[in-house]
Length: 226
Image 1: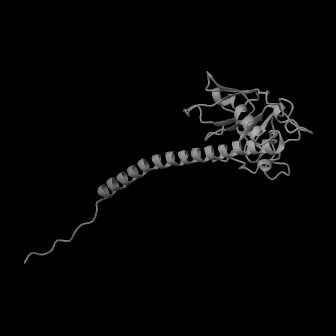
Image 2: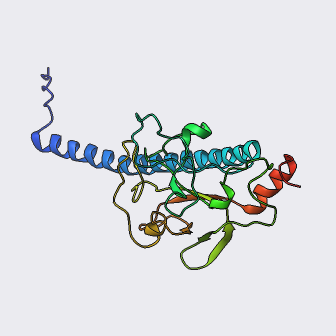
Image 3: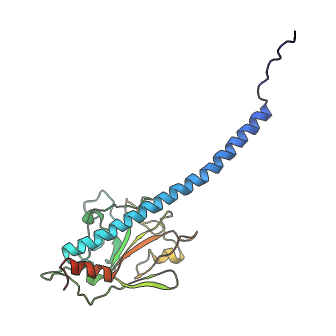
């Protein structure tokens, strides 16, 4: 009768090979997972921006003007954080962050940074006794380009998420992340030109704006403009 030979275990070499294969498979899985998370954050930020755009239009219909920006340098815990400034009639006050407390919208994008917001001053003046602070013939002073060609002009207001890298964005503690370069710098400086285009390795901002025609038509429908 033949005796049963005992089965040997894995050798150290075999174990090393198996561990190497497992590590390789895990590393291959991690890249799609990271990409998927980025896509989810991008989609969530787009939804937030659409919500903010509708909130801006709704505020304008209710108040006869667009809101002023909030002070970007105030930490979230500050009493006036997220509240629109009392006036924004100068270039220095026309740009800040979205007044999230005033509008009832999210403070930050999916990457945890605040949304930059710029408004044309004459669209955000106090309406006084008039139904609206601006006339149907008025236009904004903001221009949107794709980096080289103008895609929208005479825009009353624009909102920017500074994307995954956050270059130029303000954080919840009121500190500003170092500004980027090129087209990303255009979205964090204080002039009236902004860039909106497909994401590239050097540009990941997400931009929406309030069209003058859409805003005016909604104001007419709401009885705020003749």
